[in-house]
Length: 124
Image (cartoon, rainbow, N blue to C red; front, side, top):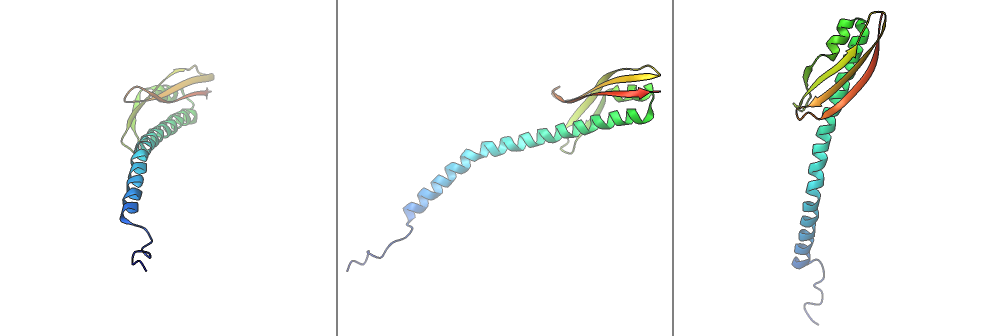
């Protein structure tokens, strides 16, 4: 009987090949994971900018004055949780006793538009 006949199983060569294949798959996935993290951070900033614009509109609606609409449309800077700075600015048309039009835009430090809002505010 041959002493090597019962040497079945997983050998060193198979282990090295398996590790090599796993390394190739891991290296192939790294760019996708990195892009996913960058995209998630950008979307977080966009969500924060959208919430901030909605807050400015609601503040203008609560006070019912042309000054509050003007204040909401003024240029303001904000920082999100990831320490990304963005600015809000806007245009408005306001007369007492009518509906004021308010257009707000949030832009990042590269001047890319993150979010924009068009709102109507009743001014008694």
